Length: 102
Image (cartoon, rainbow, N blue to C red; front, side, top):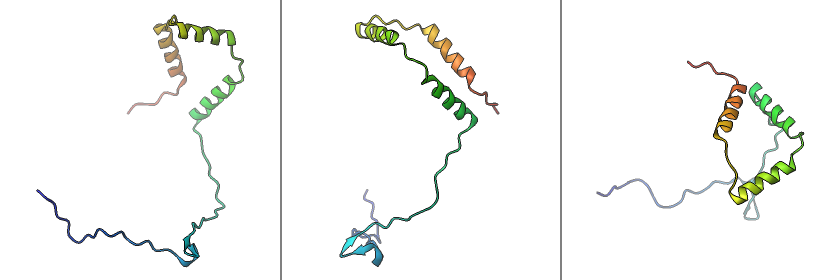
């Protein structure tokens, strides 16, 4: 079953340009200069996370540990302790503020 749309043409709609935006037949983009500055407000939770990550970057990296993990990953001998991972996830979750459920 064909659908007929009446009142429409296939020709594109012409774009109106202002005389100021067109110089020598070329269209120029006119940018607005605004004096407004963007600002961001962080929640207390976001500030805590930022503070935590900021302080962790100051701690030194154990290069020997990194190299041993890289080697274990490369040769397939790296073992994941699922219980340890779960415990760390629980500890991280406890650091987050509790939301009251409705």
